Length: 491
Image (tube, rainbow, N blue to C red; front, side, top):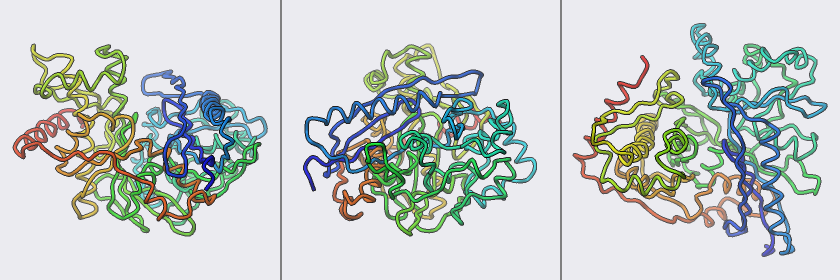
């Protein structure tokens, strides 16, 4: 392999766009990142401007490529990982969005979801999609745009509009409107896709009033979909959490990873057959490579790293997010404070959209440091609840937990996570495993890496956190958390 040959990963996240260049050893050569604005027009509404998503992604891609320019490099392929469920509708002729992107965190369609449940549609939707009815997913967001944007439904019925999750929007723009595509992992998050037939489901399209002409072609997660104007192949797509599962090389059934980002997401590889959860987890497509499809169980935590942003921007007790670890470590524990960070409701395994963030155990002696410590603890406790649900579904105990994402660099949080779970927490050399997974998928499709066995040799552990908390202390902490959850649930 040419020493100057690289794979470019576009990691389009909820709060920032990144471009990360990987070499053949899987090492990061260049990183460029740019935040973009979020909009909150009403309580519970979360929007982004599609043009700002694209322009931020274009800017970091151009910056990353420019920094390679002197090395006579060859860009062998582009892989895309993206925030999932976020819904964009645009005009097929002009490429102009008809409305802002409705972000996965947005709760405006909760009343519609409640109506679907009242109509007894939960089991039908779950049996086809693997998903619980929730405002989190794309279908109700898409229906809202068609129902509420003047003229949108008429234009859609005439075949003039296109729908996509963020991966489709990026590829549309990267190919100058030539390619409208998504992969199975992103399609499986829309609540319009049958995860058994691997096709858009006509019954669901009719239920949500979505014309089939709006939908992207569904492809595998590792193939050449199209080319940029510079003739670089776009060759890998996966939703961010599935990309991280692949980047962590969680290829065997039962292997689990947790990505600590804006939200926190645990995925367990469940093998070549979808596993129906009995414990309020989601069944999702992990990836498709060649003819093989892998599935996963998923637990979604809506608020993880964003609780640190709230401590910074809402409470002002830290000036930057990276101050949280030192502040939290300045006290031996949370001093009896329990923080349930349900700032946008509770995700798995509770699925309580009406729950709100709660602080318990505050006294005159409570300090900012105790609240910071309790906020980090709350991330770990939510993770613990999902692991317990996964263990019940799979019927086997967790062996270890692979971790990645921004907050995985917080040693205090990772140690507490290991203490709560009672198993080793393993952090890889590259915590940017979402981008690495997208790069791996693109590299497989273009021959940059020969096969999955070669990829396994690329992945390396950086640190292992071993449980150190006494059993009695762990039991007491779990009991305090369980009590706080009971008080926080809305019903």
